[in-house]
Length: 443
Ligand code: GAP
Image 1 (cartoon, rainbow, N blue to C red):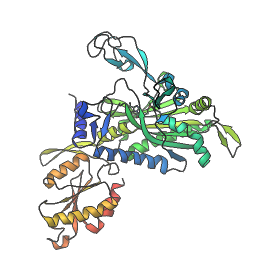
Image 2: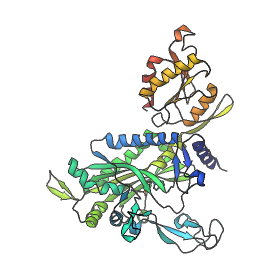
Image 3: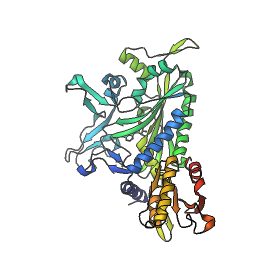
Image 4: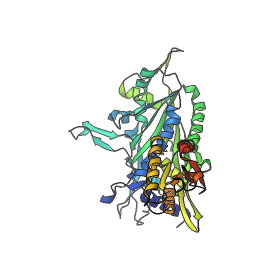
């Protein structure tokens, strides 16, 4: 096994052991392509989404947020081209009947599992179909959205009518999307139920190139904010034959995942494809009237599209570290404090000393008011607690000891704060603890 394969195995095992990610429907044998985020995972995921939302929606005057329905009118996906074109080439082995994505196979003739003969490739539409209401016939067919973008385009006119934004402006959304992937794989990298963070940024046709560059920088700024190193991200200019049907230019941002260099995000110039298609499909005029120039136009769109699950995996892989402490291998996640699921853990030095426990509980309760992502831990000795917190990437561990209670008088009402990465310890006054932590967990 290569080091990188080994890393993937370690990540998957740590995720299960420490409550980040579990196999979907695990006790029933699992459901392929679905994963459940556990108590640590949901915090990490929410931190990632909050950083994105703050950076690209709340932090900007030219951005509006929406949260549209996952189920949409089927005509949305006819107009957008997904009903006819959102498909991958599927091949089936004549012998073992396994199915593969033809474009992922090196040998298109031979089954990679049993060496049997592969059949002809056919296009397989990846949208999940469902029926709306009590009738299960063609008239009730609907789809789970395959991208969050659709909910933005259909609300374009609503947002314009409510807020009268001037071009350029954008609409952002975070939410679930569903794709019936032929071969879900690589843990949470390729899943059937995923989450996206997408911006549709509406521009005048003449300004698309400049705005495309701005969003290109935005992608790198976001990576930096969540702790994905620039050296592990590579831009790929997607060629003519390989772009999605709506795109005139696409850059894929690829990341060095443990299983190879693969797409992390996409940045696309979708022209006026979607707004024009929905105008045609719905019969409604959703064009934009520029009140200054008195011109009516269909804006063009720049779309940075971020997968939450892939960001999660890239953040996790970037943070994974091992070192030697006291002759033992220590595993730790060197998350940026801003994404860490737990910001600090509070321990009484000893569990069976009520005076220590009471003081530690008091400090914990006070801190939790200011910093909700804080954990109580009194299991095992302090060394074991450090290891446990290191494995979930807690940047600070606070120990309440006898000096806190005044055994050494000049240390009364101070605690030990231990730094996850360096292991160094500092004595901090209880009165300063909240602001000490708050300044350090913002980054
Ligand atoms: N609206 C544009 C769009 O959806 P995409 O390249 O198909 O474009 C955008 O998807 C991003 O969504 C990808 O870069 C990736 O981060 C994420 N993504 C797509 N399919 C995924 C899957 N099956 N599992 C996990 N993430 C996925």
